[in-house]
Image (cartoon, rainbow, N blue to C red):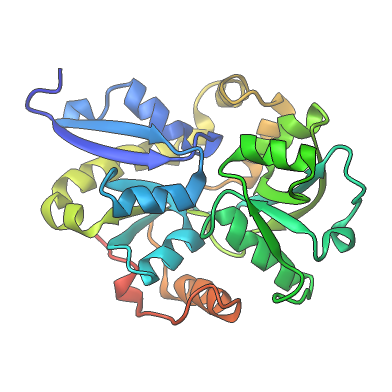
Length: 288
């Protein structure tokens, strides 16, 4: 089937942010450029994708900014080549429907469900703690739940007390009274970037440029696609009103991270002791 095509493997979360990839794949736009782009959904989020990049399961990841910066510093041989979503991620803070906890003060010192260590749900639990002046040593405890299904189980049976996940992805669980939403914690920087393995970068720069050109053309016009809100609502089991609100809040990007943003992320992660040191901008970001 893909004879003569260059196979490229890419991973991302199965969420509405990534619909542009699905649409361009469905339209066979990469095939027209001689590229067999194979998309893989990562239900375990950023921590799972960092592992996949290290293991060379994928060449490219659409991944949380703070998560990949932390992992590159920890030795993952990748570079950020572009911002994908410019706006912050709105993390909802959730408890189980029957939880006794009603607000942020109540969950201080209780156990956070996280998909895995190094994931967005883990890092943002730190950001939330810092924002609310909690003691990072004593007020944070974690339970690894792998993914959203694991979080539902943990919050329902009480093995964990609260869970941070993208607010609109979890909204159906709030609507069906499995979770209760108690607060928001927006990421203090652009949320999604495109990261690429250095080996792939060295060998396939033109191929990568073609892929980025295709996806950027789609994200520039994404909000103008006819009935896009209806498509998202149907595909991701969302209420139309929620999708319309999300579209208003979300801005895609076609440019790369700047030094100020990278410094801000590293300063924050360093202050929270999530990274041991800062590294130079050019070890994290490359402009192709």
